[in-house]
Length: 266
Length: 257
Image 1 (tube, rainbow over the protein chains, first blue to last red):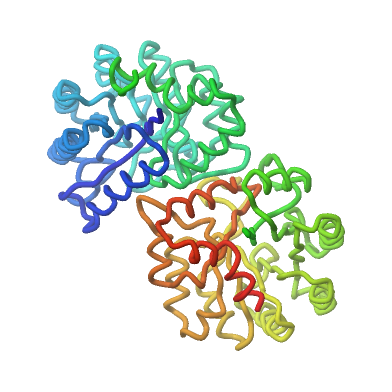
Image 2 (image 1 turned 120 degrees about the vertical axis):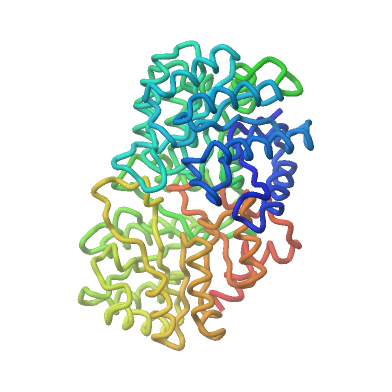
């Protein structure tokens, strides 16, 4: 079994005319790679009617609805993170309750509010209550603010994770740009932070550093926007890890932090 | 046969990279089933005189038939013509010059003269757009990325020069390709290491719009995992002959013809 913990899909309210082709391409590539389940999120309208990383409540709901529809259309291979904007606390809480009840299995926090902000606490309380992980978009070592997002880095995620030790947090796309070594140092001693290996980066030495810092029991395989890089890292891990370790990264770690029964062989 | 036109030997100054020694690179070639790799001495890209790494590179490649040396040329230093002649006489498949690493104007007089000399010597000139993702570079690594305008200027500057450009993304390739005449574009080859596969399908798109003949297999290893370029090809739905073209034929019958 192979679980991609960081996938995205598009929908008809997104600005891209080729949204269907991209969704089809992801599923087709998943078949080639051998992905059993894509755990995905949709970030509102992907910028069409509100910013990607600051989605309006209406766009959050529409995006989550689109993902629920995809999950229902592909019940064997798509699972969802409910995306929320924590600046709208009541809406975020209601969306989490609604979408988890409808079958989603995790919570996606993008970059609407810094990870160590108290506004994230109500979200984390619901994650604990429902026993679902929180996937936090992370800029690996943010040295300054970047336009279009209030990005968090691993230090801030670590602060949040220490406040909520019973919640599992997923540090998004270690290969997604930025200083991944900084992130790995920051979360080394935070046991409830898991490292998602996705992102376009395929740096030599990065996977060795992930294993050394977080250990194989805290690594989660994923792709994000580039599936060729995800597959490359998986192929390299096959030479780096033994069979049991590889199974942890491929799916067993995911099965441990997502709700029971989230995946077919779970 | 699979030829990696974009590989390095030696340490990288900005971070720890495993597998930079010749024997480690050979193991990586075995792992990725790569028959031949064109190698550059990575540390010397950052030296004042980058050609000082060429002797070690050539000697190392002489001991291992699978490694083909790509010596560095600095057209701002005296005797660079001799370095080029040595490369040609020594059978190097290409020479490289990354002008911004040397503090040169990427489309300035020195680069144009070098381009003309490479054209006359019938040896491809190799340039990298970047070596690392700009978001992750060391704070003191402020070397700009190669601009697409420079590649357009260089290909226009000499009717015989052939360019091998590595680490370019889709936008860069398209800007240069469609900003060149068909004759100019036919003298540029692109390695696939920085071009995205599914679900964006940039490589698939480029093979259709720019043409399979313009692309060659490159990895950027050991800075990057060579498995990435393999995965891109394995995710493509292309006929075997087109894949073979990317993996070797475009090099042997195009770039080196």
